[in-house]
Image (tube, rainbow, N blue to C red; front, side, top):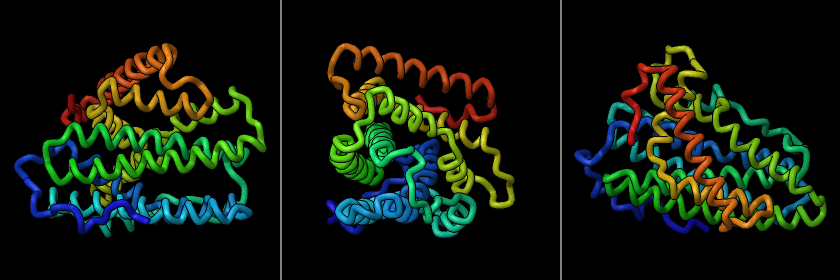
Length: 280
């Protein structure tokens, strides 16, 4: 069951004067990734085909994720009336494919698959929280707060199932850590980069993975502050079985924030033409 509906948003409160142009490209990219949830559900239900309870839960998850994409897409069309979400999403779907026929997890185990899903929800929960806190536009702020709350509930959903499978498969701490950190590193794969390309560049322009990755991350990392990274690190620690509120977690959060900002500076140096996208 949805915890909110698009029509519940106070769309008449949209204030174009409070829209930060640097946020619009991020919202367009996020809208398409969120809207593509149905394919991930097909993948998950193929992998977990012997677990009907999980597949039902994944179906509810997909409905909420799809709504996230629709809400963000609607907002982006208000912020940029020249943009067509439907057309952009069709291009994205044509160029980025999820293996909906898979019957085994690419993570090597069902526990590993759920760890990876936990990390995705960790990232999105912290990201939409950061986005909500960084914008002054009231409708986007409200949407992002609702999405962030959904994503945290989704984290708990996958975490609870992960613990159930962990009791059977008994992955070691190091196996769990490898999968979790590896999934974080996949933030620079084609998914977000191609979504950025389809949402923000001319359809005739050739996809440049490196430049689109840099454009997205330069913009996205600009909304993060130390406490957003700390929250994400705490959630990662919880997944791998470490104390999420101990000294080690605090140290890891500070290091992670430093590395994120270093990566951002490196991308700005490599692509100086993208400096106009930087926030913060």
